[in-house]
Image (tube, rainbow, N blue to C red; front, side):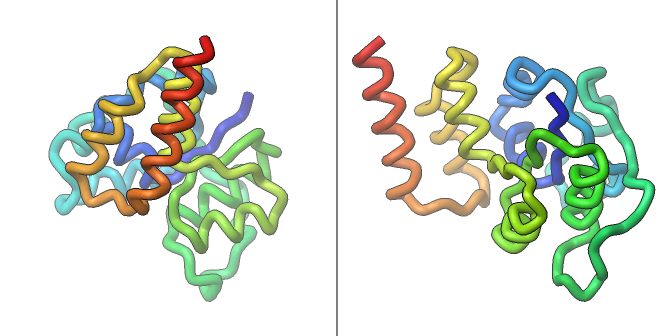
Length: 163
């Protein structure tokens, strides 16, 4: 499975201590080098900077050979590079949270998974406790409606009742 990630899902999975779900769900995750740069910025939380400074062996850094998106598309460089790389590699999925980035990726035929989907899939596979993950996510500046979080928690609870 080929999965390309933008910075945001990695950032939040690091913050909520759930990066272990990525190799379990996808094997290798590929990021453009600009994503490692974005995760290394001084304004980035220390725990994220420390993690990316010594990234695990399941994280692979690879740049696209060409930029498919023009700068005026309105996406940040990490999103642009992730989409370009995902198209180039015919990725099975791109991990991205930004709404405009997701739309552009979907417009190009890429399946898009966000942080919440990764966590929900991890819970479904017994790799994470969704309640704990969401409690930790609520302590960050991650934006999601409470109704969305509650619906995912309800679905997870229903799955537990039937299994």
